[in-house]
Length: 66
Length: 342
Image (cartoon, rainbow over all chains, first blue to last red; front, side, top):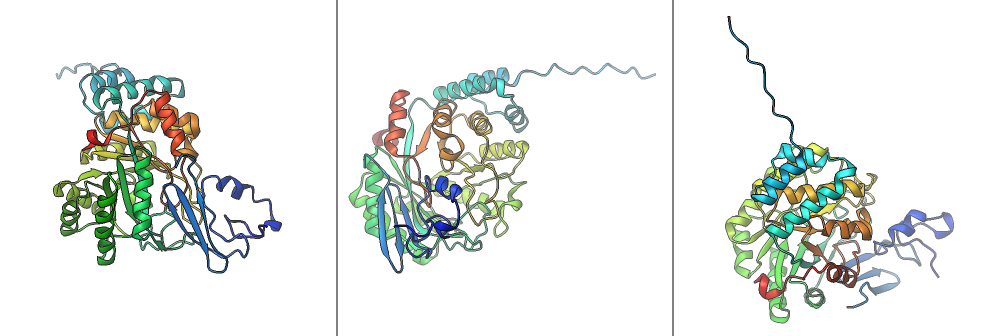
């Protein structure tokens, strides 16, 4: 379950994060949803990978036909 | 007594009619003053302007669309202060520094090629390449050429003459180095290097024999006149390709709170750039998803654009390539093939 916003790194309980939600349509997350740490993010043409020092890496494909 | 002749001023001609004769008919680009007029065309005539720009593109470039993928080899931590860029180390952007390894680079090229793309551009967020980056690029280019049938381009910042020659020798066929904005507005956008330094690298690229890809980023607070100035300066430089970016305000940067450019202004800009650069590859680059949306993307492809970046950008996400390819098929615009590109 997400505790922190992937776009701004703040607690999801602390605000509406409407701008963050819109931004997330065209942005990979920059902050870990579990601890709020800033992550190392690599974007490639067909996917993104975000690595948190504490919670490991997540890779998401962004292509349906790839 | 001196006889004063009454001044005779020719009636101001309609700019769309002038452009039709000058650019479509004779293939001569509009001047900077004429481009200002185009950029001031009222909304009611925007459709007419886009139709003309499309006719110019079809006549002087043809129906094919060049498809490209891009990837960031070195992300973030850049020493420069380009006010639009989330990869500058000088701002409190959430982007952290990271290097792409060679197997991931080759895989990105392979995925790009699978879309039918003929171009793959390797990009690094640096002032200019140091030996570490050049070594990574040498290895990467070699590995891609061994595994993937695609043309390789690079974008590594300011080059020395020796570096430009080496890149050409490696088989990098095109080099990207954007002017970004007009000479007169550049100091408001970047202070760590000059417009002239960018211009000089562009000239080195041309001298090296690589194709020059030199782009623009609009929507950064520049005036209409400065937008026309930029288009004219690009025309003077004569690049093979112009990628047209629209500002996507990046959190933490000085331009992070600027408004997104209005769709109609973006479309007018596309048409104006086509009329300034009738024979140049004019590519959709960053920010189009936000500025134009699906409908505007279609309008731009029918208004002068003849190349696209498919998939994701360097730090942000793009449209799914299947959507773009379906759109091109729907508009009966063939994707440029590799044998035609070579």
